[in-house]
Length: 372
Image 1 (cartoon, rainbow, N blue to C red):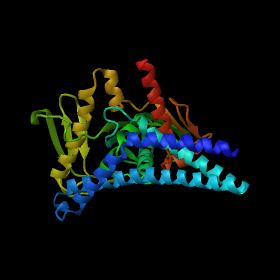
Image 2 (cartoon, rainbow, N blue to C red):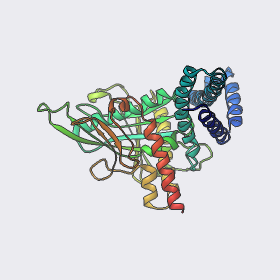
Image 3 (tube, helix red, strand yellow):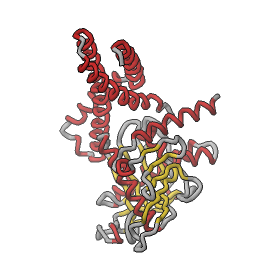
Image 4 (spheres, rainbow, N blue to C red):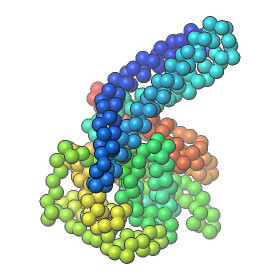
């Protein structure tokens, strides 16, 4: 790659970063960080633990977002200086080093640019994710647990706080279902492309004959509500059931009936929460989840839109959006975007950003086609 080509690439990336800076509105982001910093410094912050967790989580997420942009901008500036010095001194080795780093920076800028495509009504919100095991018995329950780990590892990689509201364990292994929140700006817009049926093909570790098994899990993603959202739920529309929290294999982890299940009678939506120690806290958390799901219903104008928002899928043949194949070959492939990788283990370890980016670009393309 010749020097002038490097200069052109750097100018193009600088222009892209300028656009990203405007879309992210870094000035507003810094102002919010300063305001949250003052709230965190208040001596009575932890008098209200729920609010304290919200404030500290939001601050951490925003600081991470700002650091991601500023560190990438610094890398781009540094590679520009390296290219300029190498060209002045005719240093071919330094030019090669700059070319390698520029390729890495280009990839990182593309990933950050995807954020500018998240302009939907709720894309900037935090996300509530529910995973349910589908067809496939114990293998499906195990697959659901693998997906829960995949998403939590992805959040850890990005330093996004995760709050698990409910885990319903299967009798033999794995999970019947799990609901958790990802507390980060744009978590909903990013993760909403994960909604749908996920399909796993492997040699079953639960089959003593070592046969290949196909199993399914469904992923639902809804946005977390904010105080400005008007969702009123009359008491008579909700049935409240309390029960004891349980761990893997049906093991009781709580000696009191602190877990709460809410059933919204008009829609049949059921949510549970058992992560808190008190019944009141679990009821409050369950109500947050229920209101988020009802928001998806309220804003949907027809059944097709509702299915898209709620990820209303059955977890079986015919409606899968991604395949994870561990046997007879190694492949993870998204059926909508055609993006694939031959390293399933890395995916299950949380390396799903390429799938998320491809999904967001695919969705934007589909929306543009409909609009056209």
